[in-house]
Image (cartoon, rainbow, N blue to C red; front, top):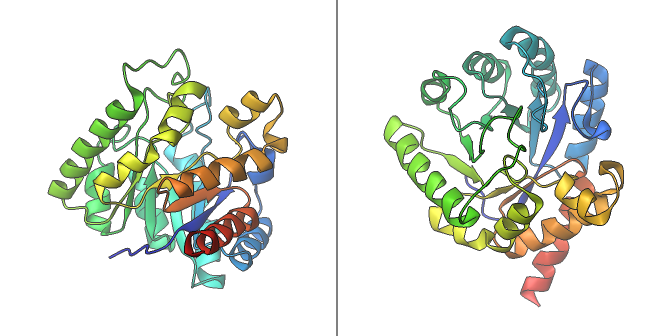
Length: 267
């Protein structure tokens, strides 16, 4: 059973050539191991390994290509850092299966099981925690005029229904993710952040994945490279509103935000 009794950090390691933020792209095993070591030293609890970019407009890659990018890095991290909790960021059932066999502990799926009909049954078989995320559309088209009557209630209703279905299917440990940037406008993302505390009714850890995303850098008129300060500010707001896991490119700053906020809350 996954127990998260205080906020923790999930460090992003992308084994991809095309993720939206260049600082998160790592291709060689040695480079990935150095990054994993650094993130763990800085206080990351989870390492989230992804082999496919799901940025808006990204091109879908094959199962085999994704496997080729992630399995050996996961094996290497599991061997060198057995204390690390490794998350595989995939919506492919075969990738989830082989990643867990290689040493991953968690399946982080942007699609809520909607892009591979065998994904959910695979997670049930693997008996690992599952990150349930909301997304409107697919990465290829999700930012083409996303619309909601009430984004908070619609995302909440989706997560309530899906979480119940996953429990009935046999998945015990579920982390919920409102899906910042996945089929949402900047206004939708800020509304979700402002209302994040309502997701606590799901009685599941809340994952906040807003690190260096366009809601930050477009609002500030800058770039992903210059969005660290904005990320820390929005992560802090997220923590105040109930976030349990900060999924970030920059572990040190996220850990410091958690530490300072915990002292502040006890004052």
